[in-house]
Amino acid sequence: MRVLVIGSLPPPGGDRAEALREEVVRLLAEGHTVEVVALDPVATAHRYMATGGIPGCMQLATMIPGFDSVVVQLQPGLPVRERAGQLERGLSLVALSLALRRARHVVIRLECPDDLPGGPGGRAALRLWHSAERIVVAGDDQRAAFVAALGRSAESLAIDPAVEHAADTVDADDGGWDEGADVAAENVLELVRKRAARERRELAASGSARFAGWDRLAVSGIALTELDSNGSEAPEAPRGLGDRARSVLAFADRQQLLRPGVRAVRVGYRIAKAALGPQRSD
Image (cartoon, rainbow, N blue to C red):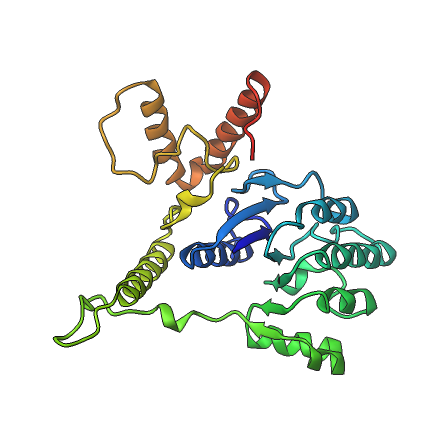
């Protein structure tokens, strides 16, 4: 299934970006083809929105057709600008709901109530919620607040708190099957999938920036350029100037004080590449 994910992945970090990254990793692990469209110009993505608010929603309307499913993470500027007035807020919500009506299956994610100026209530917001098959919130407390804001209208909506996928859990010593067990291809694939999911969670807990399946995002954004695209591979002795540059960037990226400088280098690299050579096709 082709899935369009709308929202900003790390970098920069934060609960919202990390939660969306986990969703993308889960979709990739399930075998879906994922394309990411980001609002943040330094986030990892295949494509970028020119702007947020109403113009951004109009741009999304041209991207959505052709995908089997759409996952949209609400964030400041998507769909409502941070300093938008009440009228602009309503029009932005209506614009996004109209864009999502062009999709077959829609999941809306709201990680933090502050990501939606004005809160989840109101007629325009209700129109947006009804354009989705499922609404994912950060937890039970936020779900309760969501339901309280919408009142009886919430009864017809599928509002689910984000939960850990228990089916992906597998013990570290689970090495195979007992004698006489059905060792079918489906069972082998299921075990591999569960172990991969466990490894992704362990990488996330350790703070690693590389996840299994992340290389299947065909075109990285500014967050991952050719200068450090091999950072997830086994370290080797530098062989040339490019290798040395990748090693320096990888080391600096692990130092908290040096990360802003690394980001500036990456942004400058992408800008220079765009100015000196043809754009990479999607």
